[in-house]
Length: 456
Image 1 (tube, rainbow, N blue to C red):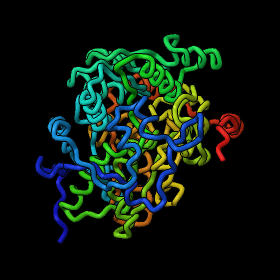
Image 2 (cartoon, helix red, strand yellow; image 1 turned 180 degrees about the vertical axis):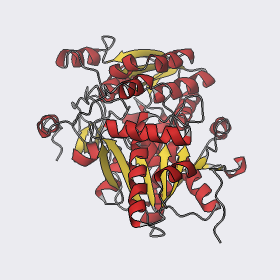
Image 3 (tube, rainbow, N blue to C red; image 1 turned 135 degrees about the vertical axis):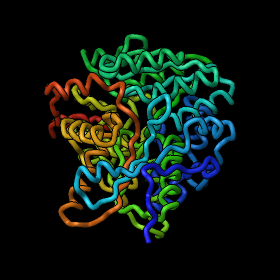
Image 4 (spheres, rainbow, N blue to C red; image 1 turned 45 degrees about the vertical axis):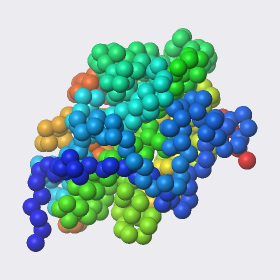
């Protein structure tokens, strides 16, 4: 007899993960190494330690240890908002009239409003432990900048945030939260860095991109003593920290004997998706179970569905290491009308390798459809979702409606990465009928991809 599933499944504090899970240890085909752009040789610990904290650089290069202990100080911080709830979306199921069982892992129940805090506190902790004065970073929609400024405030570190210009303008309240936590916010590209000035000269009037903001943050870190750069997505170290999402999700499902059929996550740089799917992919890799895993990305920035799997710069200014990933080209500038924060030109090397190996699929969705799903979800589940999260909601609803047609009672799990209460300009445009869809042409993507470096 099936156990009655509560609306919200909470783990006990004692059931929280005590270790991060490193999916690379179980991957037969490891992600290709980062390359030094000057030598085209794999980066060394010394190379990375000029930009990142030493311990984080070690985590970035670790392909062998399946589990890495979470320091006690980070666990104490996690306990402020973790474990996060796994919610059975009974109201949404009823509204859709589907036999599917829909679950979502809600990561918005903390002050930063998103999953980003899981890695922010870890990266800030290692910076503090190394004796640094502060860190620099980029942020797209602002969730990462908010999370990092909160973590730095908690640990007494300075925090310099370069925010994608279009988001800086669309989300004034998000930037004010960052400032309230003590972080400084600069719209990117800016005149404050050499690389920012170069980008503005090449792309006058641009709304910016995560690639631009990364370039500026790296320059700021490497030209100021006592600072290191930290990244909110893409890197393997970030996906490692975010594995707490998937570990908790699996533990909560196991508690009630639920096996997911479909797992869905929004995909920008790969942090939430990679963290959510990590333990489930691990089971697939070890031959212990099988799942359908779907990455959902915006049609305006479709790196998985329309990009190429090649080595490319991680940033627009071409100062970071080269990563082999699905990319649209580091010079690709996403349409400024795209309201979500999924504006990165590439995808995590881990996610890219898993996608190339056929362990997950990808779909691109247009933003008006995303906001239609967000509105439907909000009206029945009572949470205003972030535009990023709503990409996953869109496909979860689509899959549930397929079950309605076939009569299959599939278990669908998706990641609700955060709340959208700072995204009201975007919601306002949708409600006023002013939101449009933009899909880049083949010519635009080809032009950007033509500039990717030639790596043997």
